Length: 332
Image (cartoon, rainbow, N blue to C red; front, side, top):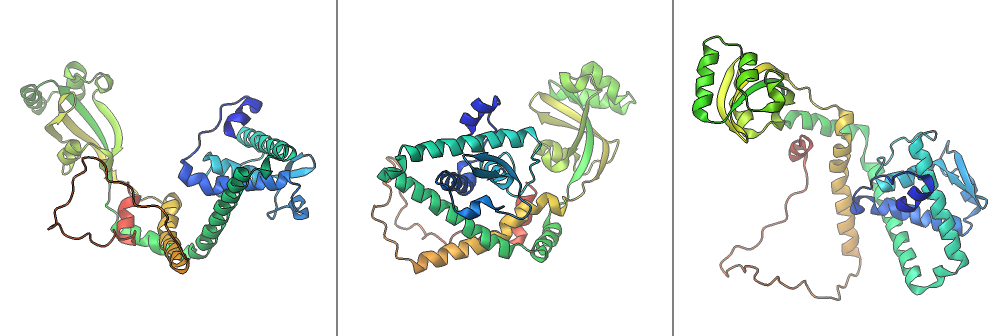
């Protein structure tokens, strides 16, 4: 609906997140719009959430602020649970989209399009996805506690690889012998900034006396990170091979980078905390259900290599995320 609403609102549609990520939330929006178009139960006219606010009515059916926030989350313009000010332009844009959904759903009912067998299967699939999302939310709600978050956060701090914030300057020349000559010139007392402005072939940093600004060491290209690893403030290192030629680097500042706060890594913490719970629930339910796959395995690709008979058997599946390897993932 984002594209249609952009026509009525006169604005570009917000960028949606991946289909897999928003599929369950979008299903809730679809199912909710269809119920509302059908008239909905009497409770639909009461606030669905404490403190909810009525923001519009379509043929007597109320649209609540929570409906708009849910639609915004389904499009990926806000995260699930993030606030969305009802006075903001974004809220009014998404509200227009919800209204468009309601009027189109109502018209579909008037035309009895819901009676088509294919339409009924699509509606049933949307309902299943909505129930899937509600089930997952119930598991998440029980698993994510302040105690669980803090325990994993402390483990993350224990296992994270410390990083540093550094400020660098560079002089880039075309050939390694040229870089060695510049290094001797610097050792003789010539100012780094002056040589950078005169000799460096990197146009962007040259006018700044070679200043590259601040960066975290774990985000630097590996050759540069290795070169400055043990360098002291004021020390010139190199030459280092870079894309444009050969670089001499000077460390102007370096200090430990503070670890991310609990709020900054909370989304990743929630993912790791709930992964086991959801996985175990799905596996248990699959074991309890009678599942019959009525199609064969996918065909092998033409020319795909085949394993020799002596090849070792596949091992167990990769382990699920644990606090130790979670720390690595959260620093990416």
